[in-house]
Image 1 (cartoon, rainbow, N blue to C red):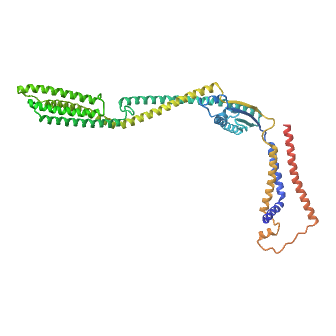
Image 2 (spheres, one colour):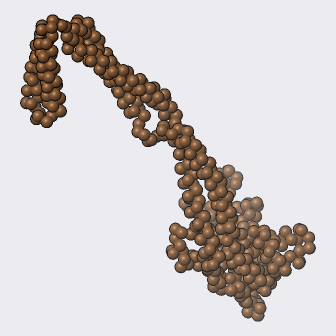
Image 3 (cartoon, one colour):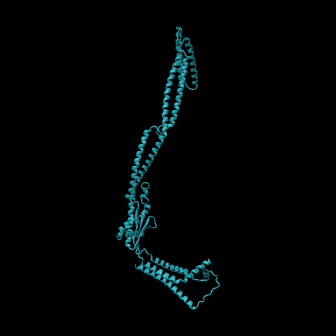
Length: 511
């Protein structure tokens, strides 16, 4: 730390020996800078403040019914458009600035200068904006701000209507396209249903369940048919063992067989009575069968008695019963054969149809999916169209955004630029810094030995000793005189700065 301090002191001593150069440079910089600041032309700033009220009464009332524009984003876009080239050209025509530009180069320079002097910024509160412009002519600055204010309000009012109109056209075009798509999808779906009637998903039950049911019915019918055929064949074999006609004695013996059947039926009826009442259909049918057998028995006995006296033969009742049973069995077999054929036909149709079911379901699903998408988009576009229509009505008949001019364009009597007191102070400070810098630079270009340490560093040789300088009265008097002259020169610089500041104040008050 001590070494750094010694180094700084060494630099300060070296610069002190070049102090007159520093004062001269400081005077030169200050004179040039003060002159430049004093001759700078004044620029007056015209400004206006605008408040954009977006909290209208209709906003909460129309929430969800009408499209709500992003007012903040719209305002930011308009503030950027105010410094665009079309807007600048319009401002130049409104303020007659384009009359002074005779060539394209002059026009370009005029527009660039106009853009550089326009300022649009927030005024510290929400939706409060300040539009300002600086120019040497205060009246021209006021005209430019007034023109910008007019363009700002007009562009904001027309932009939303233009957006709503373009949105309506776009939605109408989309509605026509989706209406055509929806009509085509409905026609395709109608034709598909007509073509595949009976095979649509959810129509007439599940085809696979029907196929399984038809297969079960077919197997049961085939089983019933086989049983009927077996019964018929058995009856035919029994018929082969019976004689068509019997003698009277054989008829009587056959009656014993009828008695046996009657006894068997009576036992069967007793068993049924243990489970059911006499009104049960099985008991009633058994009774009727017993009555028929008893009537047949009486008739056979009577015929046998007559024929026995005559020695004639009679028909075998068993043979007759078997013949009747075979005829009934043939009819049953034929009926079951027709049933089996019908079930086979149904099963074949369902089998063929079941192979087409996945493809039909796939095509139907695709058609309905496309139709649902078109329908949803069409309904959504209808809602959007109503919303945009209502928004257009709101925009055309009400003010969704209210522009209030808080402060009209105003030009103060004092110039906004330049700030001469500040600039004069900065020039003086810059002159002093420049003088110190020049003195330090000269001390480094022409090194001066100020102490023994610097001498050792410069020569790199060991220092054996030092001879002190004896100050005489004359040398001390010259030093004091030089110091007084330097302080007087530096003080005169400060005094000149004060005089320039006083002159500036007098000129500003006189202006």
